[in-house]
Length: 292
Image 1 (cartoon, rainbow, N blue to C red):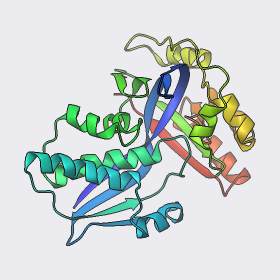
Image 2: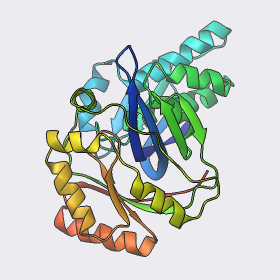
Image 3: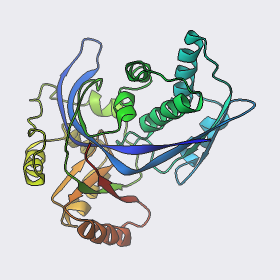
């Protein structure tokens, strides 16, 4: 049995810098990965099977039961296709997904699950897939999958396929908050009015926390205003976080998960307790971001 962690992907900043002829938007994003997320367990089986548990299992269980085309299944099939081309066995597998992250929430849950499935099957089937091949297999599954395969602090450019790792990123503490409303990523991009914004201007490798915080404060999420216009609960979420004294509050990805950055675990825990008392039914999670 193989277990892989599928960490939440958080866009600390996301600038939309253009759009390709095929309609895909060009992004410049600072991406980090939390110590909170889903878990994927893989074990040999007589026939392929997908099972799901966890707080948000109900949002996916029907698809799993019907064998629908989801990202985990596509990841399995991509690895099996690679193995077939190499003449290597890739026998049936039971994939169990512990779904702890909300769906359609701007923190890459589905992409992280697909990436974890690919990493895990590479180990279970002893394929030894080269990293370049793994990234190439992941991109058609989803633009975020290659960066989730890496799962280290990075700047992602293009549609997400051009990745530059950020060395010595400082440890920060995040409060992740989602009001449990889904936000359509295609709809957010469709409603954008400005698609040609400046790229990120980031510190040099090894910059201290204070410099990073200043940089992040000057950066943006160019999807946030549009997402707020579509789903007012995002505005409510950001206001609640700001009342809990973060150093910065922002939306991740296309929403609706928002985050607050805190300097210490004590200040994070205090903010988490406050929001748990005010919104006990929401998705609330404290997390640590470790450097590369």
